[in-house]
Length: 170
Image 1: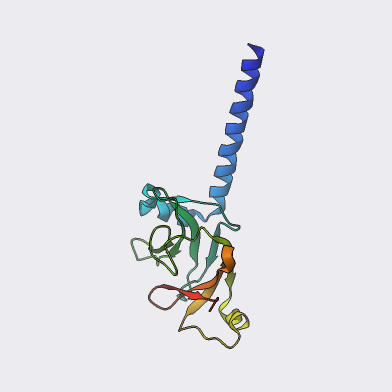
Image 2 (image 1 turned 120 degrees about the vertical axis):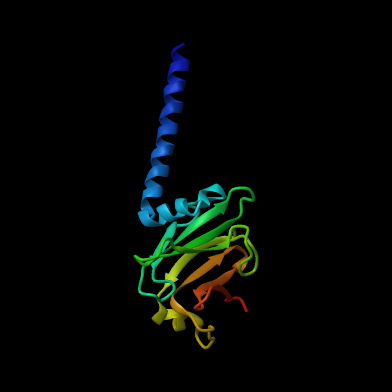
């Protein structure tokens, strides 16, 4: 009987620690982005994931002088990973514009960024240091540099209308 009680207390403690960690992780994502994730009913098909550090970035990704948020997500049915980017709304608009890159939707070389092992945000004025003599199509704002298994390297950037993938392996 004592062993059962001790085992029950141990399991309950582990469960409580798991919930605390999840809540702490969720709190790290900007409140307005979590709210928009819910407002757009994205939790129906996607889960915010913490497979990379940091699990989100904030910045003016589309060059409109408003702070946007990029969050890692996974598609619930397929298990495929991706990024959802929210453009911060203007006060007079009803909802934010969002884009899902990967997570079961075609983007770049596929529909899953599971092989990505790191991502970073490169300021607009530092992009030439990465590209050298190569040139990107027109872009606005900072860009994401992603690297992964099998030597995958690429850039994600806003072209004025949508997000594009630029392969650095070529």
